[in-house]
Length: 112
Length: 113
Image (cartoon, rainbow over all chains, first blue to last red):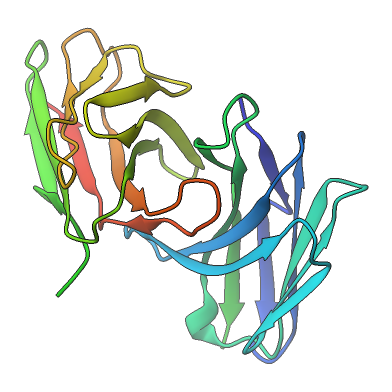
């Protein structure tokens, strides 16, 4: 049972362009998190946005949260080839806040 | 240095055998998690543990077992009952399960031969 679903599933852009990924979830949340995964590696935490926040920035990352629509977006500005990775959102489980449930991810390819 | 360590990185198993994947953390985190990832897919939760001597089934627990005898260790056993065990397994931990980010190991790639 997936709590979060990202779209698009895959995204290919030119270096220097912006990349936007979206995440939708099903139930109430305390926070929503975004992670990055390089191929064949573990996940790395990027940013956490709390349910009472609407927007958060970290370097070239901008995350928005709309709790009324149960959705979040991750914007990577001025993309670089090194941003090529899969990006996942994560939220609490539907039956327990201790569960950490991930979406299916967006595979981003940044072409040099 | 602090972190979460999974071993081995690669593991080969014959059909019908049980295998145990190791996950150790020295971050003093209470909560630990095991996920399975199939090629090109997202992460699916197998088991999680909020505290020592306690663990809960995730969404795909059938064919797997865990133990949490020590705070720093959360081994996963893939049993012969798991019909399709070939996958990438990821372990994670976090301090306050409700409000903090998770830290991940580098994963174990299990292949059934």
